[in-house]
Each structure stands twice: as structure tokens, then as C-alpha cells.
Figure (cartoon, rainbow, N blue to C red):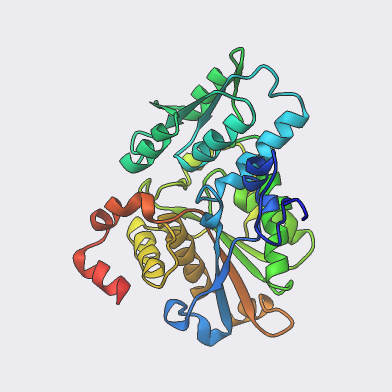
Amino acid sequence: MTTLKTSTALNLYAGPEALLDYLDPAKQPPTPLVELPPELNPEHREGVRVFAKLLFMTPVFNSKLIAARNLFDEARIDGRLEGVHTLVENSSGNKILADALLARLFGIKNVVAIVPHDIPPDKQALLELFGVKCRKELGGIAKARELGAESGHWNPDQYANQGNPRGFQYLLGRQLMYQTDSQLTVFCAGIGTGGTMLGTSRYLKGRHKVTTIGVIPSTNDVPGVRTKERLKEVDQPWAGAVDALPVVEATDAYYRSLQLCSRGILAGPSSGMALEGLYRHLGCTSHAELNRMRNANGEVVAVVACPDSCLLYLGKYSTRLSAEQMVEAIA
């Protein structure tokens, strides 16, 4: 009888390193890539195919595991985790959740989250359930860096550390080209730290002709992403990675999210925002420019990043949408 060993093909994680392997996106099967039906794609008559990349289908139910794991791996290789007993990060919730689950496996006992004042109660409760100490403070990025400089502390600093985009560059960019058989021509994502867009764009544009669309909210009412003003706090050079930067209102973000959810894709508000941003950009694109986005098959193949699910924001939909809008979205 053979001994069970870790096998990506079987989605099997075995042995003393099983949990570390399981929480390594590089050792997971690619997260699903799902084409949207015509009723959710107003551009389908123009030969545009839209796919949702379900990044919330990682073991921690959000895309931040990709960045977090790479930051941990790079820090360990560089010896920056030696003597560390406390991790501190500014986060709206998803990144610090990934940090909390990884920290124990990397020998770090304490996790401190500098969270926004409007963090959803369910998300804060989830963090505290896993032992994260949540602190609500203004200037969270600077505060996390200040605490991270103390002896025995480590601040991964997703807002400046290039390990963040490198994680997406090496993993997500490759996955997308593999899953689309190199037919991808448009990549769209909301901008939070800029890591997803920056890293993925570096991979895609380094090898293919791909249009990149970054999407931002008009107000601070969409979790996980930042307005243009709040992006000034971020040190990742994301701006040079985008070809377009549409702005979307919170109502439209929640509406598109609910549309996706009603069809079986349980994507959150930032996913809905990215999808709406894609359609706004394509709707304003000339036929000549749209033709330049086509692949060898004459199709525009667009992928929208869906970083987290709707489940931690259920209480927000009825506050952002009217009863009529909610009924219309799921019709």
C-alpha cells in the first residue's frame, strides 16, 4: 500500500506540511473562471465574452491569501520572521484574516489588525473568533508601520511591499492565461492596495496584448477598495498598470453583485463594482478600439476579478439598494 502524499491533481494535502500546503494558493487548483450569461452581459452582441474569476474560492474565501502567502514566504526566506511574535497589519478584514490563519503556521502567536471604523460587524466578529485583536484607528497604514517597527513585531505592509503584487504576478497572471488558452484580451479589477492589478498586469502585459481596467468607487461605501483620494495613501505604483480607470457608485456595485449572486456566483460588492466598471468602459469604447481588443478568434475575452464573497456584507444590500432595485436585480 502506498503512502498518501500531497497531490494538487487530487486536491489532497497530506503529511506534516499539509496545512501549509493547503494554505498555499500555488499548490491549489486554479480558482474557477466562469462565463457570464447574455442577460448579465450587455456587450455580448458585440462579440464580448465576460468571465468572472472567482478568487473568493481560496481556502480563506478571499483573494488576499495570494498576497499574504507570498509576503510570508519572502519574509521567511529573508530571515525577517526570526524572533517575531506579533504580526500587525492595516486591513479592511480580508488580508488580516489570511494573515491570522498563516501566522500560527509560521510560528507567530499574536495578530493585531488596524481596521476601519466602518468594518462590517460580522467581519470583525470573524476576525476576533480567530484571535485577532482589532483596533480602530485613523491613519491605520502609518500606525501599523509604527507598531511593526517595535521589537518582535512584523508589519507585512501590503500597501508598499512589492511582495504583494509579486504574489499575483506569479500566480494569477499565469492562471488566467492557462485557463483562457492565452485568449484573454481584457483584465478588470477593483483597486484597493493595487496589488492585484499591478502584479497581474506585469505578467499579462509582459507577454501579451491585454487591456487593463482598474475600477474605483465614487465614495467610501464599497468594502475593500479605495476612492481616488484614499488611494493617495497607497505606495504601490498601481496607476501605471491601468489603461482605464472608471468610477462606479456604490448602488451600482451592490446591484451588479446581487445580480451575480442570484445566478450562483456569490461575489461581493467590490466584484459588482469591477463588473459595472468594465461595462461602463466598454460602453464608451469606439468600434475601432473594441476591434483592437479582439483576439485571433475575433472575440473580446474579458476577465473580472471577484476578490471576496457577499456573505460578510449581507446586511448592507438593503441599505444600499431599494426594495425595487433588489427585486429587479434577482429577476
